[in-house]
Image (cartoon, rainbow, N blue to C red; front, side, top):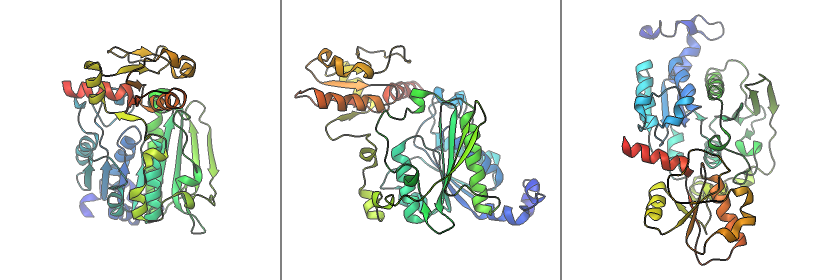
Amino acid sequence: MEKQNERYSRHFSLSGFGQAGQEKLLKAGILVIGAGGLGCPVLQYLAAAGIGTIGIVDHDRISLSNLQRQTLYATGEIGQLKSVTAAKKLRALNPEITITAYTDEVTASNIWDLISGYDLVVDATDNFATRYLISDTCYLLNKPLVFGAVSRYEGQVAVFGPDDQGQYVSYRDLFPEPPRPGEVPDCNTAGVLGVLPGMIGMMQANEAIKQITGIGNVLTGHLLTFNMLTYETMVLELSKNKDSEKRMPRNREELEKTDYQFLCGLSHPDITALDPESFLNKIKTGKITAIDVREEGELPAAGFPHLHIPLSRLEESLNEIPESEIAFFCQGGTRSLKAAEIFIQNRKTPYRPGHLEGGILALIKEQNEKRN
């Protein structure tokens, strides 16, 4: 490790860490799923610390709205793949480690092979379906998982894995049942203070380093909450839920057959999910009536013909919806799915309702990428 001495000199001189701790980092492999607001600081600090092998999983592309908090990226890189761009930046930061970018979307069919080759997983994602999928896979593979989440001004960090009694405490012990769509607003709807993901992401990187090196008290089986406005911090102990294991797949075969989108209410057998291109094509050809279920004043504005019926008054306004093929849309895709469910429950129609996956933000993002 002679050529690396100067790079990691502050670790070598650190009491309780030293060369032994640094060697553990260099031998470790960490998979970071998500290269957005949380993933950027996680990746920067893990690469700088000298994690020997880092995997970056993200199929998304950089958009202008990312740059308020995703500090690995620049304006000139809008439209580029996050995982590929992040890997390039991190190799420049530390060329002595191995960094692999994975550009496929994480699914039940590929996650087992993704996670199997790494010692630890960092969940830096932003949706419940992927979180349950990652947690269930880590549980089955007995891999430690560092979890993080942010919303508005508050963030959470937890470490899932075997506790002192050898029981694996998982994400399902924290949230046994997924919330229904719309119950927990995402960052697209609720917003997030730009510096918050930086704080939480650094905490996630810290927990990963502690887990690998054995220093300090790892947050295994505990949830830390942090408020940016007050600096109030709480650490809650998580207990093993007796029913959590009954809710998850028992092996790889069952995992791959589980529909996590449906489990988390993000898909419905009687609702057509439309990608941005299909949605626009149907509008241009006059095949659907688009209905905006966002509240008054939400931006960006929709630049195509549509009706506006906020979700908050949809049930009382169902008679305003024409007897034709319709598709709901919102900011991020959650409320539009809820709207379609309400429509199915309360209105008889021969037409199957649709909704715009990813919402108006996904639509605008795709349009910007095509321009670039």
